[in-house]
Image (cartoon, rainbow, N blue to C red):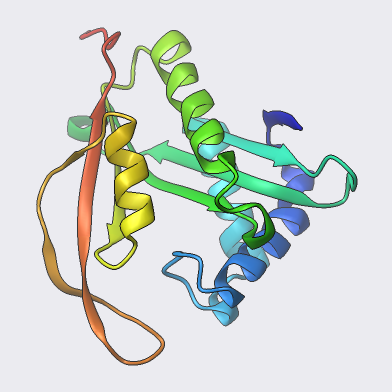
Length: 174
């Protein structure tokens, strides 16, 4: 298993990963037709410019990724300490094998050690994604509320989004 910073050339691999996750019902809010080249390229660029994006390469196939995590800062000065738009995706065949925990651990360690300009990581997860909620809580994320009827799933059922956050213990106020 090789974990590294993503590069723009990873775009097609990340897109393929996201499609597989969505097909399996793996917790991403986007539908398959919404996972476009433009969407993927945009978050890769934003994350590279003003955040962090890391991937796990497939050990037997260099053309496939088994995991990706990214986030980036908002453009507004008042929120410049917040890493937002955070997404974690693990290929369905590798879910339940601690890949998400590993990727999240490395992501948080990188922020804590090398991104003292980031005071907070915030993310959203659906109320029915109990596995994700438990994972994030076990890693120190706190539930910050509940946004009722925020997401409408493919079956037409509304569910709440659960905002969660982690505070960087090494954040340096400027």
